[in-house]
Length: 334
Image 1 (cartoon, rainbow, N blue to C red):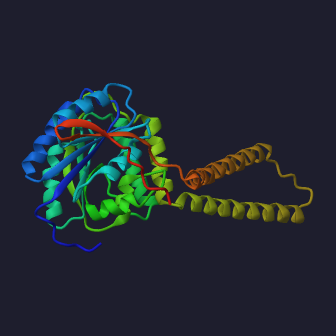
Image 2: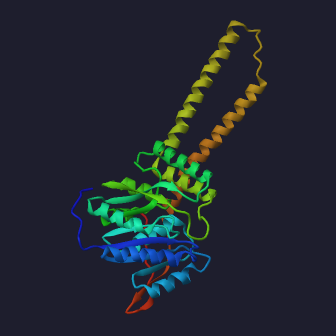
Image 3: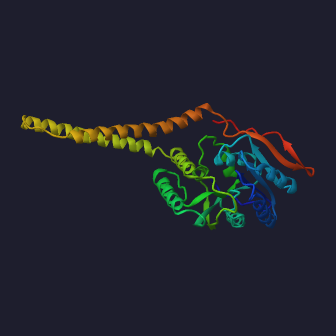
């Protein structure tokens, strides 16, 4: 992606997915407004309500009524974090777009450094975590394993210890909007686009309020989506393992035949070994079918070409009062 000079007069769009964030949303918008106002540029804040079950939507609407820069995208139901981010990107209008979660673990104040990196020629400026306060040792360990495994299995250069917190040039956003796969891994998709991508280190804070929206079950599903979206290595590993087992089986068969030929009366014991071999082969076959099934399932979901999300309504100030606009229909899946 070619690098061109950045405009001095630009518009910033900040996209923030929200799921059950009623307690922390006012403080999030307050800090975000202070940062954006300090930049001296035009800006908008796109809050995407991802089917929250608490008062996130009423709180977001109150904030939109108080701040003309706030736009609220209300999804018809909970579609998941990555789908909510996609909805925000489809609505956002800006020369640069920042993705940030609304739980205040990622500091809005870092946007100033990201803008500086963008002005210096970066197409993407991503937040890279030095420390992660308030998270369990188990989550830190599994996150470390996930990023290392992802780097090993995929061909995309996905930076370690990063999330979706990042600034992107409009050119990158437009490419992302054209990528309509259902099982989405935004940070991997951004890395795949390429261009000049630079890290902005920071220390991640504990949640301002509420509890994590990513328990182990969701983290595991997210990891599967990431690996299957960017790598066919698991399928190749199944092939290699199958060839290795087949080779061992041929060697064992030849060995048994030679022993019987040389010493016809020799009894080869091994009932336990035979049973263990059958169990091993059965387990391997089920694992292979499971891996193949993951890829087939994603192909099946893609073939149906259903929308990634459905917008119920978009709310924004117009002429001093909050109005509901017509829903935004996402681009059709390819």
